[in-house]
Length: 121
Image 1 (tube, helix red, strand yellow):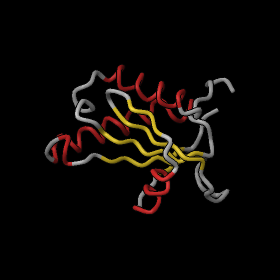
Image 2 (spheres, helix red, strand yellow):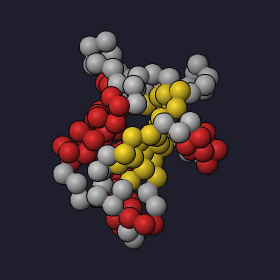
Image 3 (tube, helix red, strand yellow):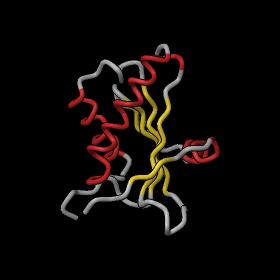
Image 4 (tube, one colour):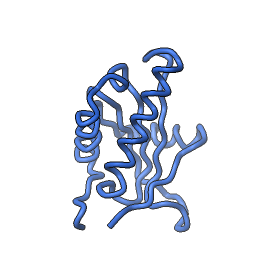
């Protein structure tokens, strides 16, 4: 079963996820999670992406966000539990990390935060 993945787009949504104080730090990313209370007509889980200026110039930040979006498309529809909001924060290593390792970082973060589900369930 695939889960619909939506987007977090405005600052108050990002701040609510950060206020939950549940995160996992991996070499390629930081994943913050929060059980959501969004309406029934919205997607099963929502994801926001951010990259600060500390990791590099605009080209590096955009590349890091693109790689995080691709990782989410590969992992989250099949493995993210519904009913969560997530924020993925790019780290300095995100743009250079091998893609399979980045997928592994995201999978491990979901497991550590209790938001992982097996694809068969």
